[in-house]
Amino acid sequence: MNAIESTKSLYDLVVLDSMGTEKNFAESLEHEDDVVVYTKLPRGFYINTPMGKYNPDWAVAFKEGSVKHVYFVAESKGNDLQGSQLRGSEESKIECARRHFKAISDNGYIYDVAKDYRSLYDIVTK
Image (cartoon, rainbow, N blue to C red; front, side, top):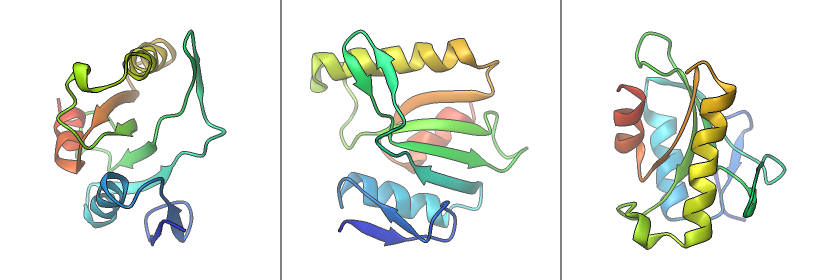
């Protein structure tokens, strides 16, 4: 089983899809003071899109006052996130997720793609 121990997640263990990008991302969330709690979203959490169901990777809550956007839903990708590097359907699902969270939120919940904690932090402090 791909998992890491956690003190900031909803559970004692965070089960991961990969021991590469996702493991590094989760370990960063564990060690950052601005992160209050996070969870790897279960497969049952999805957004319906015209291309099928889309499952974001993470939900993260930051300390209020430390960032502009306290609640964040993230997709972790281990590349430089150029659209041409994502499969067409995946890129379309990600765009649908951006629009979904924008439509249901008053800017309190943000969704985006981050390759690591640094890029996530850059997004939430904008």
